[in-house]
Length: 350
Image (cartoon, rainbow, N blue to C red; front, side, top):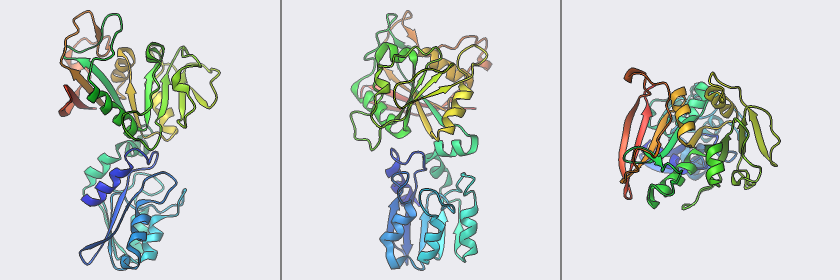
């Protein structure tokens, strides 16, 4: 199963909205076929592995990182391919949370006389597809907020200067996060101040990430780089309908109690678009609003070894906090060096 998980990681940047899945076929103690799902609409991991195994799949055991599917989508059901190949046993890491599968794949295998066992390295397999699992279970994507700050927690000088607080290695790492998330969201303030392209640079990526702009007052110009037609889905979140550049989808979002866009409503709309994961690269206002709303799953913070002073801009605007008990809480997952900077990985306790 460890080998199957390694294969599944080949689809980290390319399978959206599908899960990342790997499969190996073993017969008489020998690996006879392996494969990974690499792109939505293309063959699943089981199909690649069975094709590689050929006739040696008969009587073999297939190890799969996700319960094999039992429904027809863009590709035929994998359980039927496993049955036709004559495998005697299927071991899968975790049950598929998709209601169209959710135990039905394993049940179909057992009905065909094939032993089906789940729960092997389940936590690792679910972590690999955290966005897919969250969307299937809750209807919303996994949300990561990325921030870059000085060691005194400042993200820009008082005049707005912020390029570059962190070093080149940290910026390359952010592009890796973009590629793996598959969707990047910024606020209107970031678009107006920096006019970012939000593409993946510094490394090769098989697809252009979707681009999402949070813009309650519809301030973004039609000429902004985020609207460039380059194969990415582009989504404009506004409080009222707007005329969009060609190919840009406008989602009208209800306002929350404070008059800004409702984060919960935004997440539900993005989940409906089959977006599994979103990387937020925002300023202090949007980052703070998302954190206080409780929709943030994790923070990735790059800390640079410099001080910007008490007049510089804060990490996140979090108004109204009156006690430690009421403060948003996270737990450290990992702290690691990235070039001359530190990368802090925190996950929400909610």
